[in-house]
Image 1 (cartoon, rainbow, N blue to C red):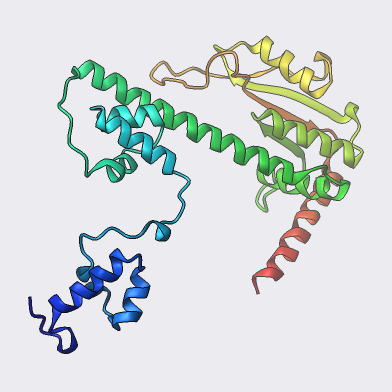
Image 2: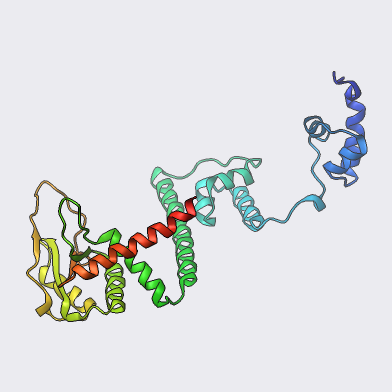
Length: 286
């Protein structure tokens, strides 16, 4: 077949030479340099149908999976079944076995659904393992907090979740509300660092009226290492029968409200601390 591009006009002659080189164990790059063929499209056409030499094949972490997938396909397994068995994606299975004969479908719709479900469950397990690995590695990066680190974290935590005074309604009180036990624990550690005595702390549970109110109060009291005498009466949220609540069950304990008595001085310092953090961070944007 003649080719219209000048030096590639003797295409068949070039192909014979390229195939000979390929069978002699040459890589595409070596063939390119030998024949001075720098057009990748033409180079690939010259060696079309000729497998690359073994030495050019890069090792692949999925080689074992690929070999197993091909073995199962030859036994008549479907993509879904191979995917469920090996825990890999269907696209990978397709890439590995697409040149092999297609098996006859012998499973029922129920069997197909079960296989698909197992494949999805296998994927979820892999994802969950990866998620836990990332979280564990990230946690290890934190290590032990210094007092200064806890101090700065606490200021940011309060400014994000605590009550704030407004120009049109000046209420300089220190009140923090949250439903996350870890957030509460960090905030209480911060108050300890600042020297806020336990006697100046008052607690109140904010919770739906049809939840376990007394159980929630016991839980938060244990977390705060205090007794029920420092708790005010719980604030109950009215239940709307038209609303389907998802925050139910034993793990639902509402929110804990923590108020610091005589907190105006502390609030003013928090506002100043946050202003300092914001100003310092702002210099990095310039």
